[in-house]
Amino acid sequence: MALEIDNIVNKHESALKKYRGFYIFADSLAIFLVLYVLFVLFNMRDLFLMFSTFEPYTGAKYNILGFGIVFETLGLIFLASAFSLIFTAISYYMAEKKDAIALLEEQYPVLKERLRTAYDNRDMDNVIVRDLIGGVIIDSKPLKSSSFLDRRKLAKDLCLIVFMFSLLAYVAGTGYQTSISPTGLTEVVAKIPFVSDSNKDLYPVEENGGTTNNESQEGLFGEPAVIVVEGTQVDLTIPPGSGEGFTSQEEGEQMNKSFTQSALVNPEAVTSQAYYENLPEGYRNVIQSYFEGLAEE
Image 1 (cartoon, rainbow, N blue to C red):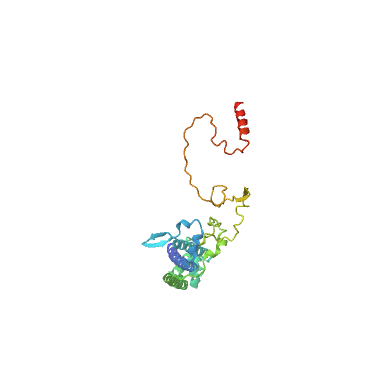
Image 2 (cartoon, rainbow, N blue to C red):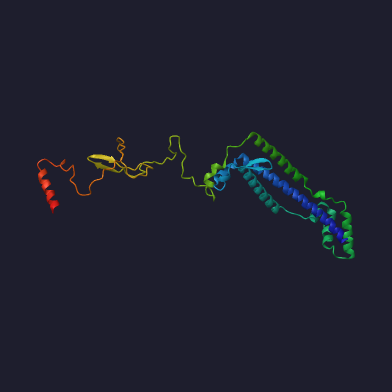
């Protein structure tokens, strides 16, 4: 008789675990579809463009089961799956879980207290226990494990799943999306680790070659360097990006002079041919005598 009461309780307990598995699967699928549809409607795929870790993979397409799926779609599926499992686990952990004996006694008052007492004392062998177990076995024959199935809960999950599938098909067919995007939350996302900030100091280039930076570029190279040559001011500021140091900003004709090698001469000292060209008249003999005297010394 003890073995028979064990078989009754184990059969109903196994059915109860199977039904709870159905609940978990239905809840997970419903939550996954709800999250995925929301992610698509609110352009959550743009979230991967804001992280430097995912930048090399954005736009890449992967062949899975014959379907080409882009990286952003895979990312949204992964996020929706992870969140749905987390939410389902939390709800299942917080929900009140009753064993098969408690549910049977709740649904069949005739077995209240008797079923649990008979199961707990099944290893005892006396007249009272044998009589109790025999009565419980007779009263439990009409029990069906299907009574544990919460059809209302499954119906709600099924309706939600069908509705989400229909909405997802509509969104995929029409391409409908809202104007809301996570790119509008750049200030919040910038505080998250691994966010790409390599381009935060760059400015988009405009058509005229400038940038959208509103900061004044005046005085970038300091005060202009000016020198005076024979009474004329010459600007010697450094042109941006020239890399050649100070160069005169005066314009003039470009001269292309080729190098001409001089002829071989005697290494001994010779008198310059232009010695008398610049000497003033009247002092030419005096200056010549002076330099000749220096040469003799």
